[in-house]
Figure 1 (tube, each protein chain N blue to C red):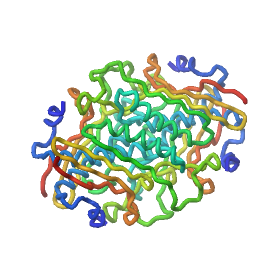
Figure 2: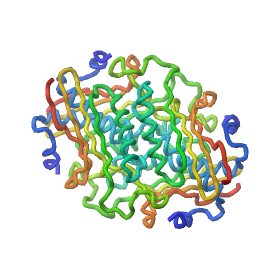
Figure 3: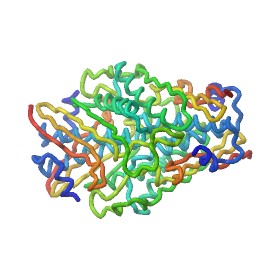
Figure 4: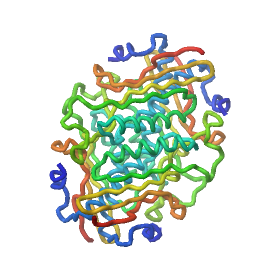
Length: 133
Length: 133
Length: 133
Length: 133
């Protein structure tokens, strides 16, 4: 099946480039799937939501490892987000998500990361490492 | 804060109606947040994804209980969805999600459910029970 | 088919309560479907995204009208969100979405709204009006 | 800003590889943002939803062109999905989405595509072309 899929790709793609492409897909899938999920500042709740997403993204093709952490929201808070009242919680945003995904395509590994970069005011997705096994 | 929120509502709403409205919100939030998440036919993976969603929806206002089960995909299968090869997994669809949410608004409880109804070919959301505590 | 669906519901539900339940579903579907979509501060872009969502939510059962506006992001801006550079755009958040949905269930109409309430720091969903036709 | 973002990346990445990575991100963002949106088999409705998504994804970094088509659902239909009754519509799935995204990173262009491949029973994302301008 992997070979069948390969037939659709641009023939000039190297295995290294396939790995880089696949890690881009996974970072965006993770990000867009999780954004908007209700969350509160509670370690156990955050861990369970992150664990669920980790298992989900791990199902995707070529994924070897997913690390995902939902960070507590601290800046600009007008609430505690700990359910002091019914509306005291928030939604997962780019600002409080850090995740790393490792994919392997044939003999190449690409590791991608998404994290909030304050200077960019942006949840940047980038390739952290590419190597041959 | 709950009182402040109430000021925005139509004044003719009873507590029972508020509970019914809130359970509608929760069922749709759960459904639209989860749809599209990668999944495979593996009990542990399915449970972890369901647990994450359960914790997430439990953060929302007035929620007392969330039960969520992702069912194995059996009908119309051309694959096992158990990662026999890289593309052998699927996405969560209305067809394989069953969830129940209980909300309490003041002295009223409303229990809503979403499940696939074959005769409708549709993931129906409905109110299963309304009662006063 | 509508009658078949009704069989699943709690028998004590009035048509008025059905309308209120359905409008809750639609508001949350709209919100969770749109959250996270890339957006920039450009009237035409915002209108086209809002129009697409409006058509989508209008497909759902009992929907008579959907109004949806994506508001320009002004507060707390460190960027213009007008693509002055590649990362100068943002994502749709609860903060910049205003929508109103009208549903009709038999002879009852319920109008629901979602909008950002600064005092709650929350995208509040509420029933604005319920009336018999 | 683009240079600042580049500092986070693996230093061994070529511009060609950056383009390939970025197109992977865009395909997955498009897919996961759209999946689950209500839809019916009506040309105008489908076009408006596709147009909204196209504008949204076009906001993302390095995107030069987005083509997006939602295809009518024909196979396995037990309904017309044309709102013959309230539940006669469906949700956007991998099965009925075809999209192509073109990104440019410095002097390299990568064109990616997502489409349903029956033999894989899978919405395959692949790189269709990579070239230098």
